[in-house]
Structures are given as C-alpha cells and as structure tokens.
Length: 303
Image 1: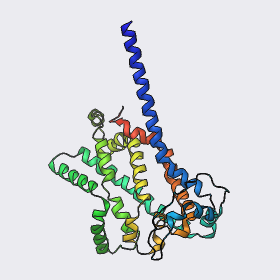
Image 2: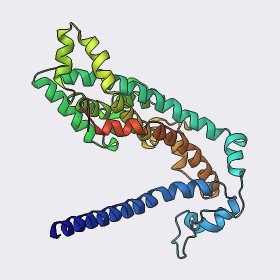
Image 3: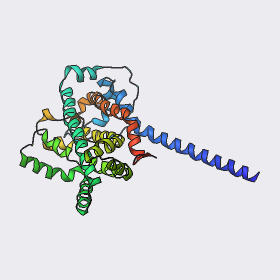
Image 4: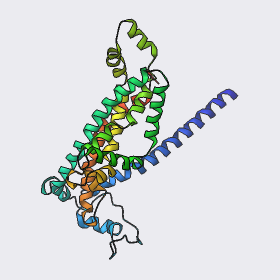
C-alpha cells in the first residue's frame, strides 16, 4: 500500500512538473510569436489607423530626434477595416521594394550554396587529415567564428578595396562564402560518423571521393539542411555589410530598407516586413524535420 502511494505521488509530481513546463513553454512561445502576428495583422491596417495607434512611437521633435512616449501605446491585433493599400503600393505602384527583395535573393542564395559546397569539402578534409597542422588550422577557424562580424568588417573592407570589388556584389559574396560557421558545424558532425563505415568502404576498395560521395554526404543531409537554414536566415537579415561595402543604394537588400523606417512609411514597413518574412518561414517549415534531425543525429545513430 505504501509503495502504491509512493508511485502515485511520483506520478502526481511528474504531472505537475510537466504542466508547469508546458505553461512556461506556451508563455515564451506567445512572447516570441506576438511581434510576428502583430506585424502581419498591422500590415492590413490603413495608414491613418496605424498613425492613431502607433503615432507616438514614431513621433519626432523639431530637431528630428525621438520624443519621450508619455502615453500607453495601443497594440492592436485586429484592424478596424482591412486595407490592401500597403500591398498594392509594394507590389505594383512602387517596384523599388520588389527590386530590393530580389537584391536580397541575389546576394543570399549564392552565399548559401557555395558556403555549403566549400564547407563540405573542407569539413571532409578536417575529418580525414591527421597531424598538428590540421588542428591549428581548425582552431583558427573556431577563433574566426567566435568573432562578431563587426570586428572583421574593417579588414573585409580593406581586402575588398585591395581586390577592387567594393561597390560590387563580390564584396558580399566572397566573405560570405569563406565564412567558417558552416565548416565548424559540419566538421564536428562528420567527426561523429563511426570510423567503421569508412573502414568498411576502404576494404571494399573505395577511394576518398567515393567515401565522401557515398558515405559522408548522405549522412550529412540533415546537418546540411540545418546549416543551410541557419546561414540563410543569418545573411537574409544582414544590414552592416551592404551599408559599408555597397554605396550604391540600388544594390542594397530589403533588410537595409527595414532598418531605415521613416515615420511616414510605417504602414509600408509592416507590409514589406510581412513579405520579407515569407521566404524564411517557408524554408523553416520545409526544413523543420531536417533541422531537428541534424540536431539529434549523432554520427549515423539517431538519439
């Protein structure tokens, strides 16, 4: 009887702890998703309604500085009247926003593709190579990854000037392709691949290219998708690089516009931000299973 009471008490404690964890998770999920929902719903508001609700947030004084907000801002999720004016302006009346959107695509897609290609070969080399030199080079990769981009921005600008590629897309592409982030993650993943797989392939007469193509590349599929999602989101939201390395505003991505919102363009900013979120959301939803698999996969054995 005492044992049964002990088991029931353990079940109750487990149930209570599970409920608390679910409530906490739902609370933080609501906090994180609120800005997204607010942006999407507010993109269907008329500019006059946006000014009435958020005018105090974007108000400026006579010198152009910010004004202290002395009143409560009304966060409104449901518009009084649905308006598509902002979307009509963004999609049809003002093509500049679509040009900037495609500038983002042109800048980001090559970085993702070629960074993953370089990372796959470099990671395989780090996995297969032996010796202290390999460890030193990999350590330097880790150090570079730990540095924020703002630290390496000036050296990147100097090198781009020396290569005469400033004010061209190459100034964004080349540092992005050479980023150590993907190399580090893929190397750590490949090192967890059981050595018995590679030894079995070598016994069957497989060369390095066959080992890479038939063993390492298929096992890294989940990790590749995970890294691709993270790299895409990182460079999709870049602001500093285009501002410093691209003086021509026609080459700037849409993220630069979103970082320079004017008080009279708040409604447009909501609509543009909604459109700008679509690729990231679609890529995440499509690769969600791969992202989880890439995190849980431990050297060919799912955890």
